[in-house]
Length: 329
Image 1: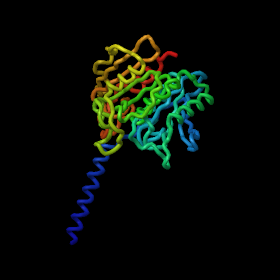
Image 2: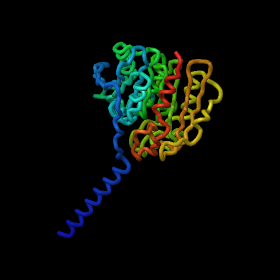
Image 3: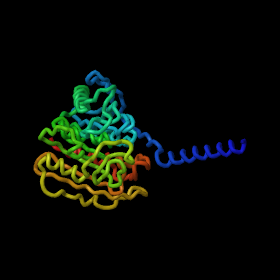
Image 4: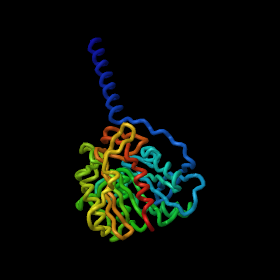
């Protein structure tokens, strides 16, 4: 009996060790180093339809009036603090360098209420209106800090990226441009957004080895069991959705400087930038990260292996800010 108990104990310890090893390999990743920043991070609250919604704002030291505002949205089951960390504080670094404000709102629900009909978007039985939340938050921050109303931008990763696309479709007059990372447009049967008839500039940044949001379209989920968001269009078809919306015809211009292998330490990443534009002020860009998994490519933080390869180049935050900065009023 004693031998049986001892063997059972060893077996249990072995399973625990195996589980710990698998967790460390597939899920654990160390936090990025905290950079030296000039400004301060503050926490705020705004009431929307009777619910307190929270956000965190980073403002560089001695920030001038009339500068841009960038909204950065988190993925499923996360909050504003986590996306700030998981982007490697990249937008804070850029805010210090180029002089703009950054806000990290929290959805409160598991998913942002994007254009997909599938998702966990309710709290206490009430569906949250995130378009209203983000537009009211924008108004509040402009009133408090004097941001340029014509240079408000939105970006996000995963669920936050999907929410960015909803803002481009339903509130294009409020957001000069959006950048969606690891996100595509739902197919027609899974699409619930109201198209306004006007467009804004849109960037899509997707990896070809994304395990949650397939680059070539299909069901968004993790192993078909978790993080379900319905059927999506491909990245190419999502870009076409916005070129059609913005009435931009013709073939894209391919940036020859990026259609090659770039080196970042030991990391090698091939990516392509395809840009559709005409004489109007709107444009559409598709950034394809070859061999990239789910999330923002950047040099500061590696994502868990569970969501696919985590290239350290290109610097996604820099590409997004470059896209925002070139938009004309």
